[in-house]
Length: 347
Image 1 (cartoon, rainbow, N blue to C red):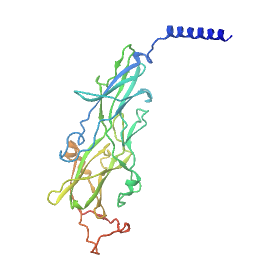
Image 2: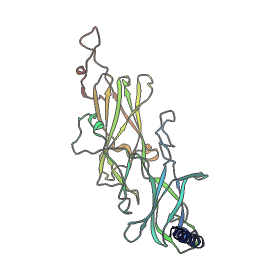
Image 3: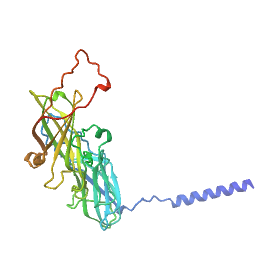
Image 4: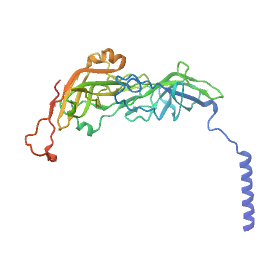
């Protein structure tokens, strides 16, 4: 009986092998006609980040090309995403850096949206809806918030991180025809896509006397937009924020130096009556907290701001010298000896 069973099992295996060998046929996972090549270049000529610097000798902002891009196809009728692909393959040619890959989609009419993915501080919301997809940044951490002087700060003020650059391009009239070959998806001009940043970078500086007494300085700029829609790059006027950024210090020339930064923003609020003010929050080497607020609404309409995105403030911050301690003859402070003294900076 055992011998008969073994013979029967061998015959069954042999039959299965014959069927498998005769029926095995390599098939593509998708039809070739549903596969579409897409290439996205980046316009990395960004004022005050990669080009157009006010002073080439100063520290420049950190910048590196994105790691990947997202390409999404949306239904033209309701704006819902129907297909997507993340492009990780990176190359370059005479036009610059590009990312490419393949998207799978049936023939039809679509909206295509592409943007860089994986930014550090810029967050994408509603990426599955074309007309509602927007970029924003989160409020600063509780630790940073606690280090800001409370002088003049409103309880309902929303203080946020500056955004990373977000490169975006789209085609709202993309037609994918029937075909048997792999085709190339293009923008409305018939060319490869080119992502341009919806974020602006401004260089800002103000002169300082007594900079040797400055330990750290941050800026808080009001009247900025907290988000922007991806399909058209327009700022959201209903989302006013204050952007937070660190300031750096220059070398002293004579008795004067300056603090400076390059900050990023989706843009200022469009209301022509919008008041823009910047608060400099400075900590001194002896533990004082000093603040001053300056109205810079007119600065954004000056030629330097319009043409170069430079905000060069005319005021001078005067940091007073630390007062001499009352008890001389030794320096042995404990933790309780340190206190913050809040005062206005003399301009």
